Length: 102
Image 1 (cartoon, rainbow, N blue to C red):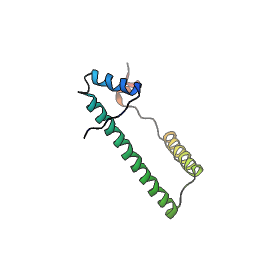
Image 2 (image 1 turned 60 degrees about the vertical axis):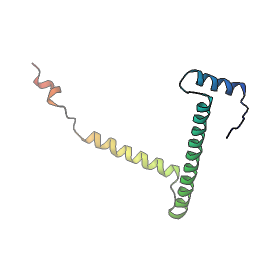
Image 3 (image 1 turned 180 degrees about the horizontal axis):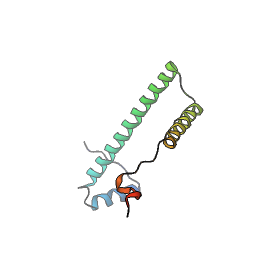
Image 4 (image 1 turned 120 degrees about the horizontal axis):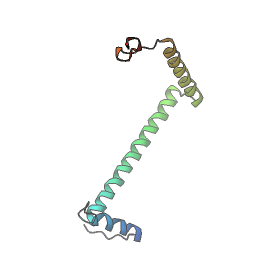
């Protein structure tokens, strides 16, 4: 199937430059690659929208956390981790044992 499309001067230059770079064999290959990327983008958009709908349904069923609740939980976890590090003694391998130096 042949289809004629009109490109802006910038689009045409882009296609010509890519074809001339020998990275692509022809204008057709450049356009095919562009269409494949468009398809991938649209697939990702559809996947994101499905995920968003599922998340909204789950939040409606199970409830949701506010951003403040999430941030408070993050702060709590960080504080616990920092307290755990402060309580743990520092350990050095024998390679770094300064007492064994002459």
